[in-house]
Image (cartoon, rainbow, N blue to C red):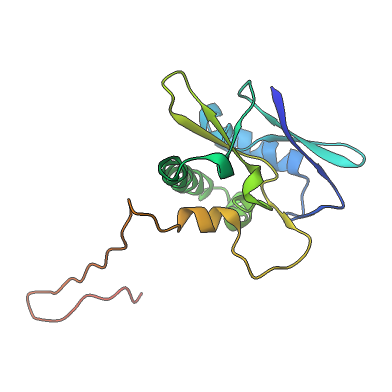
Length: 171
């Protein structure tokens, strides 16, 4: 395991009431090992939390990636988030944390590794944490997943039944 991030307790806000180490242990019981590597392993110490990745080497910074790679990272995170949320849906104590698990203080906590085929692997550090100061800026994961790019287009699908009425998403 390699250290990919450190955070002092005074520099971030923890978004869970339980310890991140306990939460990580619970995630380990629900997620397969490959999916779990999406989250860096936290180790809380007296003044800081150290975040470990299962991948060796120095990760790339999300901010240094090309636009195409940033799009690929957005897709990767979106796919992982959907799979993780589905897995956690059956565990009430984790299901309530879904939104908070995917919050990081800044894009610097999105670490990129590459496998032997040069495919991107994303690891989040300082997950379930936010900046201390309140800002109006969206959290980096939401921004990344919803990022507009030349390779993506928003699509609106309208469904019209044979009787002429339009389908709606009203529950």
